[in-house]
Image (cartoon, rainbow, N blue to C red; front, side):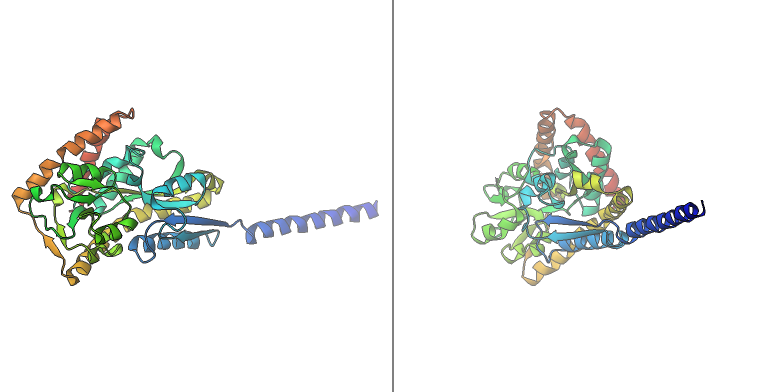
Length: 346
């Protein structure tokens, strides 16, 4: 009996050590997740530096459990293929523009309309509110980390200054998604291409100009070939961007790590919007050094540009309705959000 007692006690003691060892292993050898992130922005662009800071903060808060390697310049997947790359798992995260897939994201693309945005804060708030309000099925095949939108999209030309609406007519203007409708409304010819292709197209006179925020003139060096910017703020547009994660990879994470990504991503909505504003101002200084001319329109001409884009709104509503979505409801909600946030972020 005494021998049996010591045997049982020994087993119990050994069991305790074994269990303690298991706890120790679980604590010191927690699962790590090495993720890839695809973006089309070049390495030096502010919208590459922002995701790098986002990834670093997630890594720090997760104590190294989440590591995110960012592939820039479309090196992992080209800009138009980044969303599908995330869906298929070619990359775990991706950042790109919804407009590179025309018609695929009807609800969140409402933000792209030419509402006359003053800054990126307004557009960024609007696109995130749209996503939260409507929870569109178009984004159900990924986990959305956060959305954002760039600053006012304006008209820039290579050799012909545009001081009046009629001077745009006949020009070939690089544009994507809804901005192609804006170009047509101006009486010009839209030419679709990604930002990465635009510099050479401008330099070789394949296109006469582009419709983009001022930051692109520095961020993609387009100010080196563009000579004029028309400050058509009354008809300025924005474009929605996504930072999305592969759905299966998201679901594989424990709740505590999911919470870290969610909390950091919410914080980066405003950080990203501010970065757009800062880069617009930097873009102005960059172009001024090159002798670039910024053309301020008269109130009368601003009114003409604003009136010219009204058909774009009708076309958007029509296209969304064709997809079985209440286009009028989405448009009205977007318009109200723009008005609300325009008062807050003047």
